[in-house]
Amino acid sequence: MPNPKHDVEYFIGLAQQHGEDSEPDHEVGDLQTFFREAWALLSEAQRAVFRERAAVRETVSAAAGDVEEESADVVAVSGERTEMPDGGENDLIRVCVVLEGGVVQSVLANTTVLVDIIDYDVEDEPDAVLLEQDSGDMAECLLTEFTAEINPKWFPRIDSAQAVDQDADDQRPSP
Image (cartoon, rainbow, N blue to C red):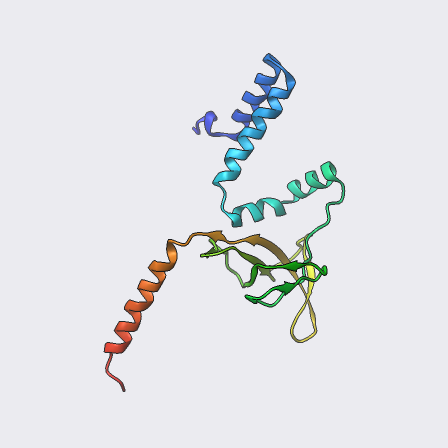
């Protein structure tokens, strides 16, 4: 039997009880503390998935009115200043990842990079949008944008692995 102290309802109940035992704003403060701590444990990819959940979007809409969504247009990858579809500018590099039957585990970078995830597997998906293809045709997809997790420790490892692979290629006899 699962431990009830490992369920989210346990923490919500603690916050509610604290508000009942003292002042109601303590419940809100406790919930904010729990949420901030949980948020700190999420990767950027997990945060993006959270933001796209229907219940979260509905709550945000009810709490803040119709929040203007970020543009769904995909901008070409460039290390230069890129004009955004809304007319603004962005100094960050943007990378587009197209999913085809897979799941992105994580996106790592050695600098801040915006990542657009395009998933065309959208049967009966209410949040699907139309995206113009290179051919000019329109296709339904889900678009998610987030900032890649900055994790520079991976890049020396990758460089090392590539160097070993190159050394192995150099030692193979030519045909």
